[in-house]
Image (cartoon, rainbow, N blue to C red; front, side, top):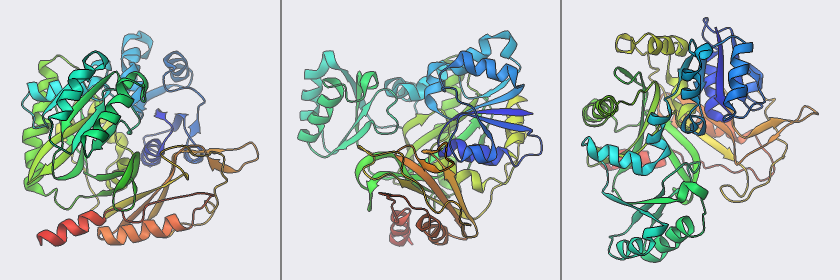
Length: 434
């Protein structure tokens, strides 16, 4: 069976890597892909939102499965496009339709959904340019820190935790008055700050049954010690030490199951991944956000821990047999470190030659490309802010981090930067409690 993966990042490279291990998969195509996906699949130079060209390619190359990695394609309605064309309806699309994609495409929609179905989340209010003055009054009377979120898609950078009124009002003006995030900032969700420690839960669901995938914790801030500007993700760890059976039972009962009930009651069809960003507040899970695809860099940490055939998991999704699927998980820890361009997440240069990719990586170390491309001369160069994800596998988090750091050290380019402290907060968390 031929598979088409939609996207160009480390998540899509990891998906291609995992699917390629299946004996049921014949050919893998990635649109548009990167220099890493080109090593194990065939890249296709088509935009992720050019549905007409993607559909033509799927027909011409006998695609039977479409795995959507990037959220923009889902929010724009790629699943709807394939469902509405009779000649495409035989293709299994792993990703929800536009109505379900609103869970990520609109923070305001997701907050209303959470409250309606009694799913634990932070208190909030939503503001627009027309209610800007009311928003300022609200911020003047709000306890700090406070969280401001651009309503729409902002590549993981549309969330600001403001420590005081001055910072909050400046952020609000940037979103509502100065269009910092374009139309994504036409609405701003102002949310109470939840005190706790984050993790990400992932399911694959047909809207009724689901399979719970390994959890992960990602690190958004650019600086060591988790300080500085938000990024698309500087690293991730899996498993998360505090996500024991008792905590994950709460996640299932209080979050996952009510979410699926809500989707059914709203008449929203849902076929694909659902990423649930959570805050562990004194042992209780609160939902920070929904994403309607796998996370990045979490994918690079969780897929190496899945022993089961991903293709078989997708077949169970297609056959509505997820309830019977027994997911086999590697007990080892995975730590992912992202190597990024100098200056990221602000201005950075592209086209820097990457050195060290031709060297053998240490044992139990994986390399996933994100912002890379191959030049006409055959050189692999940087082509984005987040460039390479290195994942180490070990018996515990420390060994996994050590392996990932060793792998990261041998891949270099001018201005390369990465955090070496991924997972350090979890070490401190465990030390304080045990």
